[in-house]
Figure 1 (cartoon, rainbow, N blue to C red):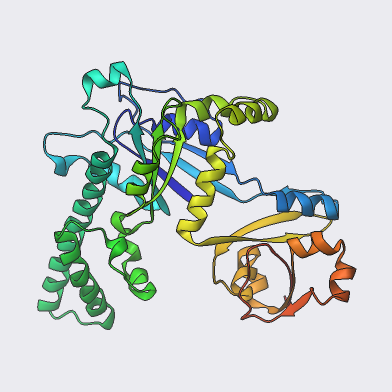
Figure 2 (cartoon, rainbow, N blue to C red):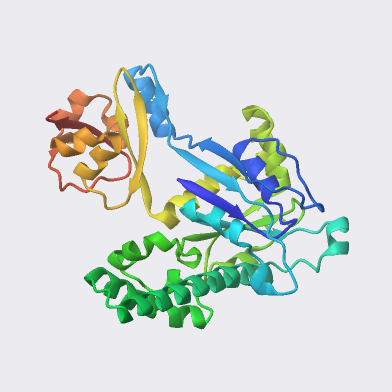
Amino acid sequence: MRIGLIGLPNSGKTTVFNALTKSTEEITSYSGQRVKPHIGVVEIIDKRLDFLENYYQSKKKVYTTIEYIDFVGLKEKVDKSELFSREELSLFKTVEEVALVIRNFSDPIIDEIQSNVNPLSDIETLEQEFVFSDYKICEKRIERIKKDLKRGVKSTSIHSELNILEKCLPQLEQGKPLRILGLKDEEKKILSGFQFFSLKPLLVILNSDENNFHNNQELVNIIEEKYSCVEIAGKFEMELSQLSNEEAELFMQDMDIKYSAIDRLTRKSYELLNLITFFTAGKPEAHAWTIKRGTNAQKAAGKIHSDMSRGFIRAECFSVDDLKKYGSEKELRNVGKLYLKGKDYIVQDGDVLRIRFNV
């Protein structure tokens, strides 16, 4: 999973990036001179996988990962339509989720060169730029298709594409993002080549300081009327990420934080992207895998290896929780909690799978 951190200058994106990835990238506040994104990969610690590793005495353990990209701060210009350059827009196309880092803290130096803190206005500014960019792409493509049709170009696919784009254009003209248009999966698939930014799932990271953290529930509630939102104390979390686990635990208790920033953001991202985790486990390796909720056993097998999907026979299946409860695979069989499932079985979060297949 790849998540892009996007925000206006001095919103604390790199601070949040450092907190999430335990990086030590320079915080370039007030300058905006950075020209390249930072990239960091984070392991998603899962206690269920730790249990499986211990139970099977696995020689290797593989967590799922999230790749975070800290994009360059987007400079607001006189003409709002130029907030994103062509080069900056191209960077966003590879991310599966956009995370807007929104400033909710005061800083004497930043306050001198920028307007007052206004999270709702910043969200709207960034959202409208996504919409405007998509509008230009959509309008240009419609014009191109119509010219091709006049020249005699004919195909079912080009008509399908035109119909969907003409459905999108009025939505964008009204300043509304495509993610709330209610497009069907097959329509999204046709549009996938465009990588429309307002169609991507969007998470708001409200970046507060440690003094007002936990005092913004009303603001969070307003944001959550339209977006998935998580509040973090970015600077505090960055400092926390550089400590040992024991020290970090004590500081989190002092701040009344039950879960770290990475834990909370991972949960929100999994919910937003509708993801679940299943496992494979044995003596050689305990491995966590991420799939879309609703994925069947054959497609899940393809996540492990394409040969397993092509030659799929059936899957031996049980849940981590049941293994913990009953203590052994033998007892799972005795109580009927170890199943043989066919290719159409819908994999559940926490399932352990063993795939039987023909090479």
